[in-house]
Length: 395
Image 1 (cartoon, rainbow, N blue to C red):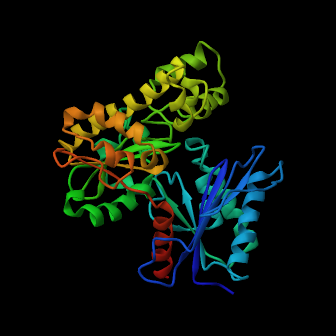
Image 2: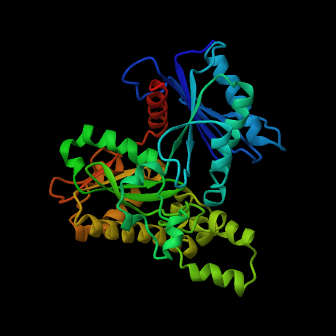
């Protein structure tokens, strides 16, 4: 028997987030009925983290840890729903390629086609597809919907989507897709509610988490973004390099004789804050160490510089800047990195309220600031649930 609850799964290589939303209430409440995540998948100390509760140590099958984590979530969701099934499952899919932009009902053909984009997002793409396949076997009568991080940036003009490669590459789908679209989509709902029509002006949203990107928005639509064909482009991230001269890749393979797999590992898993600092991909770990470790200082300086540089570029595309908004794990919670970014953007007229920034207030700029600077928690899971519900309501 199906419930009136929709399950959202956000599957990654080392964590799976889940949330249950009330699909019977219109409009759908933004606060989930229940949420949590399995963290540390594949590591020595995985945990089940239920919202509002301390992490619970768990044991996962070491040969198939992702499958075991999904099974654990399925078991606990069914227990939470007292044996009833969710009415639907929505999956965040990072890359939809050139064919998938709208929310899509999952079929075996859809899964097979989305596998073709695994090389463009190897840290993200395989895992929702695995979850789709397992649930299709276990609950074939429960509809599943794929929602795509690339979809939001479809409104950008072709000149923002195009690389200066031969035209045939564009025709084959080699273009800037952009990512973190569910997060930016949520900003399109939340920012006008909080800031009114000011949010419809020249806005840059900084989604800063383990993955990071910026989106220039006007009229709440994407105008330009820093991520491109893959989830490697743009800003420096926790373990990913961000924008890189392609000649460096040619050099690594041609001169240093690194294999394709070795280069991919370097760019996706061994670069970014981790690679430069040699210590950690997490700014919370790095900040206390910077006074005694030059590589850590360099890593944090480079991280901030890349953000500042790209904000400047997007402000130029927008023709100015009215609002800068920080979101996601680092953006919402790291006041020191927000401060450093804003100090270097003083030339744009940013004036930071230090006390408001320290308390992670919704507005962290002073009344004298020419640019409103805000902090807005994101809610990708609610966007996924909402998109899936609308699709299923269409029949």
